[in-house]
Length: 566
Image: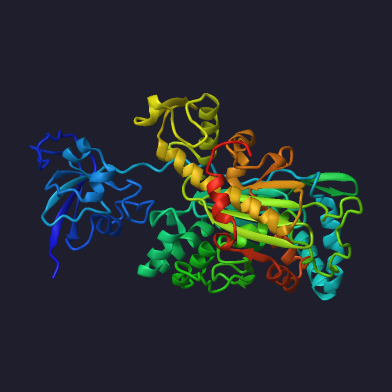
């Protein structure tokens, strides 16, 4: 039977700790909160229950250090993990981690939580008018609707009614990311973005990676995780519902005054990775945490959320590791093909008479904690994913974003402070090197470089295997999607060998294709421009590759650990 103890949580502490082994103090003052704690569980459980902490980024494994507390009275003996991740002086001053600390007696603590790092949310897609003719797409959409005569007539009638009631129709696109959630209000007919709403994903309190959230869901937090995201979506809906468009009314070629069109939201499309969509829908995610990683459902879904009188589309995925966020990206870049309503499959074999190869071979790369990649020659498409770890989300102890870490590494190479094997030069080998970077002092150690090498090697090997499997000698276009591609110094990526030299001049950052694709898919599904069945058939024809099982992956992985152009 567990004991109940009293924990006093001081919110403002003005006393001073002495340096005694037990960390006792003479006095403390300031406002405080007293909570009852079950001595059989960690302090984090009690702090979470009482709303005094928002959680950790590591899911309570002690990795992130975000839940740091300081014992003012009744300090506990540090655990081995606390000794390994905290400085001796911190431990002597009574600092511990709430996710590991289990006090057995009444105590007094102060919250010393590490504040959230600022994350830039990329919500726009870069204009690709040269490669992606939006006018021709709209014309194609209009033609496709002929296959849906009844639905088209109804749609046109609805549009007329909207005009009569001074309402204009919009769709909502959602990029449901592991770290951030971005929403956009888009014009139904033109696709123009008129408003944006972004938040950090509140599920991060249960860990920054999907495995931590899978574990949390399986431990009884499934409904909490589900509600967290729906609450964000509801806040976005409230903001968008207040949007009104003012236009000048024109009667008989005369301006008669300002007419206000009220926002009418007709549908929503949500795109996220497979785990994020499963958590949103309240699915059992236990099978996503171990081999063979079987999802409950990855097809296109249309649901009805009780508070909203409109369809909510859940973007389909290709596999457990290539989800709806990648599919919508491929969709908006016109890399899927063959899924437009009323359109025949491509009749051309896509071969060049001169080269005998498929035309317009395109490579799609979206990097973060995981790296998803796709390659197509217009007929065949192959996709894969690789675990990139934290290196592309943030490096050097998360002091910099992953793209900056690539630029820093390239700079250290160029200056001779770092060699191609990833080791710092002798003066810095043991202690690391501190350099000025964007108005901060950045400390780089060998382990930071090693994390980047591991991620870089996996992605680089994956790109080459996709390329070879498709059997094409040339890639014509490379799309770098997401925040990583948006901020990446492409030259630095070539310098460290993340991208092969043969792709120079072919790489283009495309921004948030998941969000732009969700907007396009919402509009096309609602207006009957895309046939859901044809879309599903196209996705089922895509080849999903397990890199780890590919012959030659290990040798390529080891080869590309070196930091040099190749």
